[in-house]
Image (cartoon, rainbow, N blue to C red; front, side, top):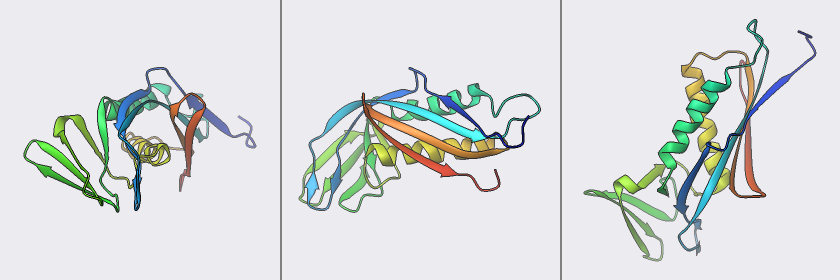
Length: 167
């Protein structure tokens, strides 16, 4: 292997997707509840190991598919919002917007996500964090960067990239 080369692998499979309802809300604005068929892609950069690859595609697919599964067919609830109050009321999740608009969903239909806005950008960041942490748990070494894309429609994709320390 040439010392000057860098390697990047891309995983963008049809099954790395989730369908979910959401709305964007920030102080003074709330859009109507609606849904998307989200598509997820992952690009990982790193060194090629003695086994001939950066990492096993299967590991990335399994982790990403699991995260997508947790979000699939759910209402995305941004628990770090500064304008929504999120609480549990028995078997329900309750979201109240600053103007008093109230949304009540069965807890089993809600995905509580530690983000401020249910935007494609913040969802991409959430998927990246989950993937990064899971790869660390799998003791994958030599990775230098992870990029995650979350598309909410064809031609509308948000990407986030993180440089890994000690990759």
